[in-house]
Structure formats: C-alpha cells, structure tokens
Amino acid sequence: MSTPGHGGIRINKEVAFSNLTIDAINNGITQGDYIFFEEDCSWAIVAYEIPRLRESMFRHSNINESDREVHLLGILSSWERKYLLARGIEPITEKYFCEDCRSTINCTHQSQD
Image (cartoon, rainbow, N blue to C red; front, side, top):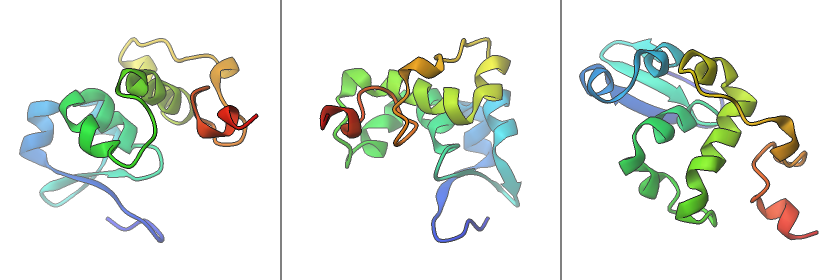
C-alpha cells in the first residue's frame, strides 16, 4: 500500500480476521497477506476495535486515556461514518467537532481559546 507522504497501519489478514469485525476489514485495503488502514482516518477503526492498542497509538498524544474512546468516535463520525452506521453505532453530531482540526471538543485548539 502506498499513501503519499505518510503511511498507515498494516495488519496480517489472519490477525485482522481474528481481531476486527467484517465492517472494519471492509474499510481496509487488501494487498497480498495484509490489510492496510490509511493513517489520517482509517487508523481510528483499528484503535476503536482493538482497545489494547490504544496506549501505543496515543503515546505521543495529549489526550487522556479516559477521553480516547470519545475522541475516536469523533474521528470516525467525521471521516468513517458509514463504518459506524454499519456497526449500529450512532455517530456523534457535528456540534462536538472543532472546526480547525475536525476533532472532538477536547482538542488542543479549543483549549487555547
């Protein structure tokens, strides 16, 4: 998989089918023995579905552990809405987003106001 100037998450198909829902897998890009999730948006699907990976995925973030799930729901509501709806999860409404970064209200932009 190639994404201009950046990467994403690569998961072996066997691991993906053991740890992700079919809805998540359908949002990835399959190449060979791997399923790829693009860095900007699709990575949140993997983080949402495999909570034990969140600590490493958020290691350089200022988002508190207790706020990570709602942050992921905010990202998914904005960029992966069809995934949430396929899972029967109600997307968060737009009123919760920061217009600067399209993230949840706990973003750093809003704390600077």
